[in-house]
Image (tube, rainbow, N blue to C red; front, side):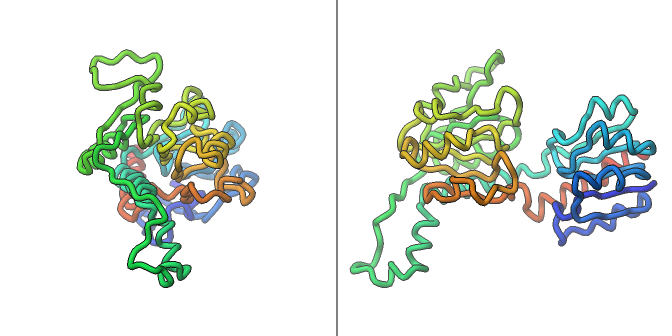
Length: 306
């Protein structure tokens, strides 16, 4: 088997990918630009990709291709219907990053509630050193106990975030999906989440239904003291509207690990604001998660070959 790994850089240098070689001849590329994809997969039986787009054009240039291993859970970079036409299997890896994303979500909530970055900056800038008293009280610091956490998307990550938040004494609100009838009665309407939540955390996939799920209209329905967290996908929050909501204090703060265009453009106005934390799509990247991801890829190849 000729195996081609198209974007090894997304897996990290500390991951031992040599285990893949037991299944065939492995060719590794750190990154692959769109104009190079077709040439690089022309002789491949198996390709492994995280975010490289494999569409109709690319599939037509890979006559030997039998399996696409997606080094992620989301498969929106693969033209799956076209792959099926060619008899090509597409396999992803599920639930490998649940703990990491939940942990990063909670860290973002704590950072915002504790004004952590602001106080760390006060110390490094020397402002604490010249304080007339032993402490500083110029940034609000809020406890989590008794606060309402609204969760949008109640899959494995949403459930894990809820379980951790309960330890802090938070009240958990789970949003209903529009048009879905539930047998349980613990979910609440989306609008109720907007009005009642002190913190909203997004864990739903990006789809036609969730694209621009949060616009200025939704932010205006939230508490002015509320914060929003997004570790799911860029595009679920309209970034232009988020900028307006944050700059005009319509909501208090935000923390996002994902943006609509990644990497984030250097001229994105959100980068100018002090009341937003932006991390570079790293919630999933714990050492443990990436090891689980590799194990999942190996299992998918083994299952296919068997």
